[in-house]
Structures are given as C-alpha cells and as structure tokens.
Length: 264
View 1 (cartoon, rainbow, N blue to C red):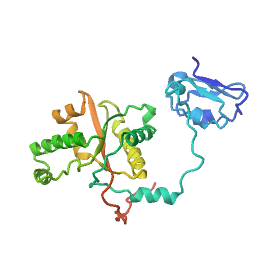
View 2: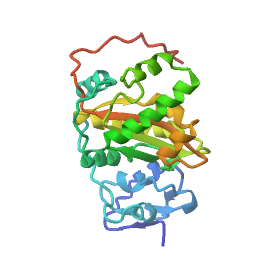
View 3: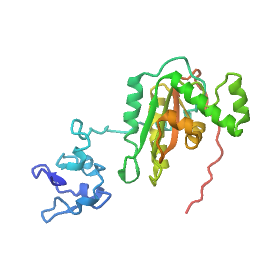
View 4: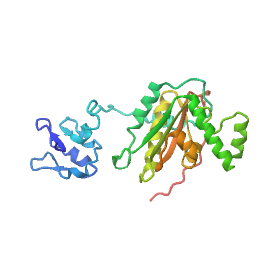
C-alpha cells in the first residue's frame, strides 16, 4: 500500500503536510501537492494527517495504528494561561491518601491520555505496570522496604516502616510504573514525560500523585521486586507514580528557589 493517499478535490496544495513532516518523508510533487519522497523514514507520527485542515491526506502507517479510531479532532483553543500555570504551580506531591479506591475506568483513562506523550522519533517504546489494588501496592512497598533495610541506606524510613508507617509508597491505593528495554536510548526521558502527562491528567480529575523514586531505584536492582513487577532481564524501570485521592487540599503554593538560567 502506498504511504499516502491524497484527495485531489480536497487538497489546497498549501504544503502544510510537507512543512510539518519531521523526517522528510514527503515533498511537493510536480502538481504542487504532497508525494512520498522517502517512505522508509516515515515514523508514523501523524503530523501530515493532523495538520491538514481539509482532511485531504491519508497516511497508511498512521491509519494502521488504530483503524477504529483514526485521527481525533483537536480542541479549538487551549485553556487560558492562568489556568494552566495555576495548575502547574499548585500541584503537590501527595503523601497522604484517603481510603478510597481508584477505579479501573479512571486509571484506564489516565493511561490513554499518557500514551499521547511525545517520545523520541515517535518510537512509543514505553510500557506500563499498573495496579489499582491497595494490597498489591502494599506488597510492592514491603519489598521496597526490605530492599532498603538490607542496604541500610534509608535508616529513617526503615525505622518508620517497623513502626507501621509507609514512607516508600505512602499507602497509596494505586500505582503506575513505566519501563523500557534497557537499550532504549531515550527511555528515561520518554517515560518521564509520559508520567508527567499522567500526573497532570490525574490532578485535573481530583487525584493526587507522588513520584515513586525509591521503588524505581530498588526495581532496577532487587530480584524479588523485579519478579513481583514481572520484569525480565534487560527491562529497565524509569519511574512510577503513586495515585490516590488526597486527604488534604493545599490552600497555598510554597516558594521555590529563583530560576538559575544562563541566557545565550
């Protein structure tokens, strides 16, 4: 099948699809419309299809991703800056959660939003390990606690664990962990962006989150924890999020250090 199909009746020959193609797979043909210049370098990002305001272009690699959905209609305008900025400043790392479950439907929605996060060259190599079972989160916290107790590197947290306080996964009712193959060159960055997408989507729906850094560290070293997560050799965890409904609402935004930037 050809890489692209162009509806000549709809194409305005404005060249937007060619300009927006990041890999140089398209070029303008003799008649002014797009043609496939180098199909082999197309990474199925979908920019050529999504940028066309006339719906004149179809890309076989994009449509093959999910034929039942196709290209979604974009929103007509972005939220006001003060709303976005306020959300970004106001989100907090939540370490105290209500005894309230996170539904499968909500977690599934968050995963769906997170899959639209950008990845290097659109490789989409991110994989997820997810649970909405508080008992399973507790099991993973126990394994993380055991790892650090054996290492002796978090004595304060280990002592609190013995007293019944979980400083490893904070008693969260849900957890999402990201991983890629260890040789994925941008695996850490791609997973970090996807987790941030999930975090902001969660906050907008009333959830609180906290980055699971201790579990991330332990999951790349401890065989027992890796087994519990279902990780095979050569698979590397790049991050995780605890999720749940916050016990408290923060009325203020704490200060941050001044920006340190060198302008060029």
